[in-house]
Image 1 (spheres, helix red, strand yellow):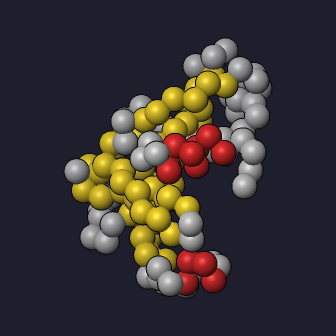
Image 2: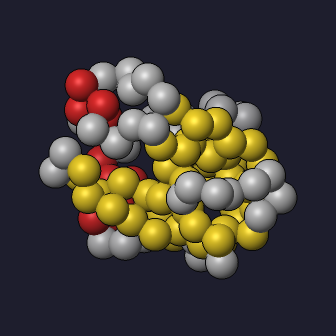
Image 3: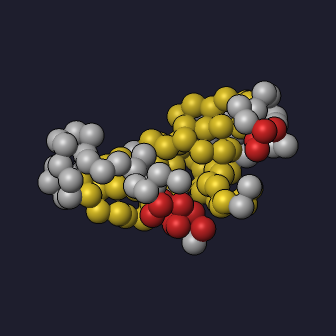
Length: 120
């Protein structure tokens, strides 16, 4: 596991979506990094999202990229614009459409709690 993402995965295990906030420029970022993508600053704080947002895009995955996810196929991957102002990729419930309001939930697969969005 990426050392920068450990706090995100701990949040998922606790039923929370966590993201980074730059103390220098106030940028938000979903993928955990050691620095801010906007200003390069290293003063990043962790925050917890409310877990609600809007589906921006989605795709159905029929051919899983790894053996670990083959058991889930077919499954839906969504890009969600969270109400906090950042976009994240996660699993989605079947039947979601672009523009749907969604709420994050979690499911355990391969020993890890993964986020999955469903209609709110």
